[in-house]
Amino acid sequence: MDNYDFSLAVQQRLKDFSATEKKAYLDEYNRKKKSVLTAYLLLIPLGWHYAYLKKWGLQVLCFLTLWGFLLWWFIDWFRVPSLVKNYNKDLSVSLLNNFNWVSNKRDDRSENTSEIQKWLKNNPNSSLNDFYRLKNN
Image (tube, rainbow, N blue to C red; front, side, top):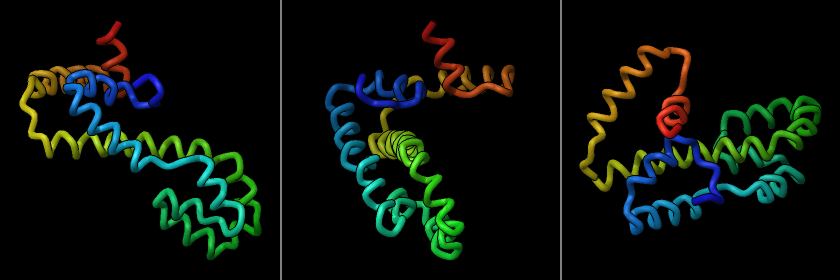
């Protein structure tokens, strides 16, 4: 799991998975994650990188504006790695939610949820990553 750039919330939840569940999750993640190389290859000829990342609104906007007369296309050369990274992080959270729903795993989530809710109430400008970072230290 060290080769993955998951958020702390996802990392914490994956620690509770059995080896079989973790393998199933990682297999599904690897199957659905997007590649920076593929995104660049789709950017080169026609700028289909937004469609590849399932950002159809931006894809249509690019076509309608001709990529801001190619200025937007040039800027995207520098943005592609972060776009793919953000897509893959969102994917990891989405898969985790789907996996938890399908597996119906019963654990101490209700206890943990109330602890998280109390912490977020006391720290409104913080995120779940901050909660898990403090909890692990």
